[in-house]
Length: 387
Image 1 (cartoon, rainbow, N blue to C red):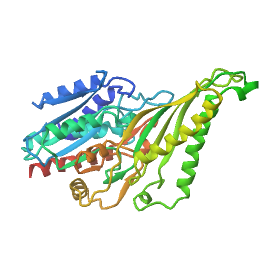
Image 2: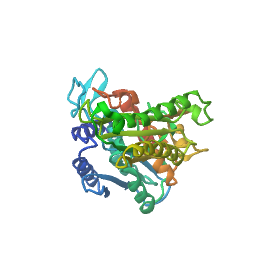
Image 3: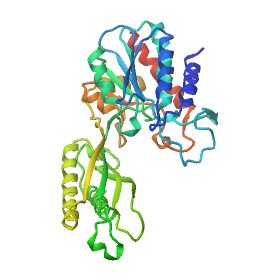
């Protein structure tokens, strides 16, 4: 069986597991463990606190430093409410495209990475090929930090990490970091005809959302810094995507809940933005409690994604550019597990098949050409490890 055929069969299996982030990924992890064990490769699970999900890592080849990590994530976003023509959990090939949830983001890369295992063993690689498969990347790279910490402690240090998010097989050397909060506002209910005696959690929440809009407007007006100018948009964005609350249209809302996230350009810190947000929360909370002392705002940090900073003559970037021939300068505004590897001292780059515009979409697809290009690229990575 050719490596491309093997990768396609692996992709079929990976997509068949509906590893939506709200659900367990353990069936997929067990399958990957069995696949690796079939080649005599041991793997290690890193469980979440609830025991419902796991990340997984493995090392193929000699236990020496200087290897390459191929990093991907196992989870996908939901298909609820999306109008799919094909079955999202079955890979369907049509007109040179592979349709299915996760084909692009990012089970296509994971399938090709796993297909390299027997090739690496047959090639007698002199430096290790390490596989890293995280969970809950789509929820804010939650599974990566403990997995990366174990790898950094227990495995020989790799020279380069390639995170295979969809970049059209271009070398992406920087991306924004991000952080998020669950926000809960507790109001005081009264009849809306005497709303001045109550506190509407929704209307106060709107003040925090208005603050987010002002931040975005100020960012759009500002002259970006050297790093920020590389991004689209070239400033830190503040976003609210979902909101809920209230009992009836004629009652001031007792509760309002929403999530808020910050996508930070490199060079700006999460601590600075957290301080600014908490100051605004404190300001509106004082206004709430001046009307009724039982009101307030609770913040719960939901995720932290480390930024990926461009490296000076980084080993990962050098490797990818040498193999791919790509000498362009690319950064992206979406986050990945890459920043968590870099924060642990790994030279890291993002490079994988597909277009991020297809990620999270109904009828998500990965072109056969990109899938094949990824396989060719990774075979050259194996050849580098064997040289």
